[in-house]
Image 1 (tube, rainbow, N blue to C red):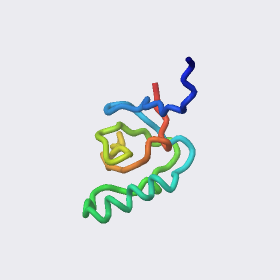
Image 2 (cartoon, one colour):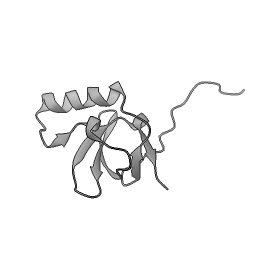
Image 3 (cartoon, rainbow, N blue to C red):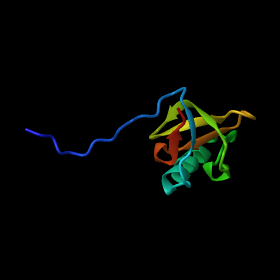
Image 4 (cartoon, rainbow, N blue to C red):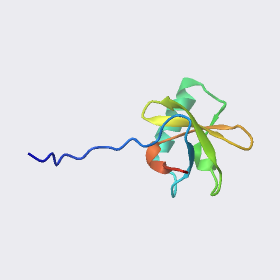
Length: 87
């Protein structure tokens, strides 16, 4: 019998090089809100990400990821649906 249930494909792994897919979703903003409540002031909002910035996935946070900018080392929190892997 054929399984027709929708499955989420987790193609982003820790250590992957990623870029912004299109624009930031509310899911990423909600993750940032959780970061602010937790008191992690050194994590930046994904709304500050510009087109063409390249990141490395550092670790997992909830249902998102911490990503580190390759040029200046800033940390951001973002939802995986907002990212695209650069191969």
